[in-house]
Length: 350
Length: 79
Image (cartoon, rainbow over all chains, first blue to last red):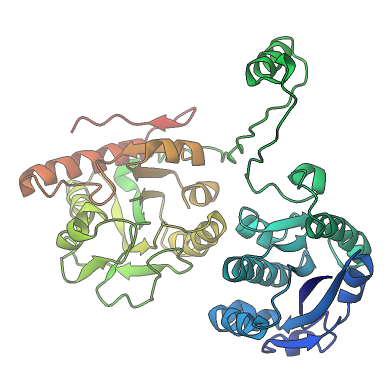
């Protein structure tokens, strides 16, 4: 019989709410709480163990939590790993995504979870982890478990994955190979032309390769008078004071820093450097102004082309950084800009 | 980050080397730079030349911030 191990948080394990959110991971034989519903829906598989971890412990001590859970799994490695459902609970979603990804990578077994579309975990993990589209809260437990376990049963019995839409999970952007009967109507040329004909006739058609449409933001109005503008510099090029006081990560950054440049005419080598791991740092370390052009901005400030330069620059690392993290970091930076009356921003990317 | 800042009402000039990426992500005012490791100054050229390039392109970015646009725009640079 195939085996399954499930992951749930402190709340669903029934040990407590916020006050137990720092619970360290532990493993228990058999089913705990909602895992019973998972077991009931499984056709020919046994849930051998349930892993439990507090959401805050997972969120704030992620590396330790993941390492400990992987350790707890040694000797109990199942055929399939299931986390959640996490519904719209953000921290739980993050935890489920994190642990599914780690388990997949470490043990090369499939991992599944389920979340509401607005759970930030969806955006962060949908490309790496199969996340089923779930309800907002635990009232949808039954339905969410059914959807997820229908697929689990197929997977465990070796039936083919019919793809994200048919199975009910968020598209990962993976293309599945599918063999069609060898006839003219099935050739790519025929399918493409049919699609084009439908498009030309204004009829509905479906692309076979969906390119995700980027969210467009309205164009902010230009500054009306540059000579009064307060301009701020932001970089994703990882320029920081040499001791990297905010310990910004060299890749997949989640932290950013704001560094005082008042009184400085340029960024001096040795005082500033880049900690970006995505490019050769030689040039940026020799002259950080090639990434954060403080010298040029000072020149324009002196000429009176701009009103003044905001006395800080903001920095993070843009390699491997998720859109969700980038968005959050920008949101955290905005109040500092607003407080100083900044009217425009130059953002440099490497 | 460009989009979040712009959503908050700040015009943003995105100075970047990978212009197609910037376009597809959805930056509105784009100013090309010369490379990834040294966006605004080629270390194999004399400092005076690097300065000229940097001064010029930052100037283009500032002009971009003062330019009203109807659609996503890549601002041309001369150096």
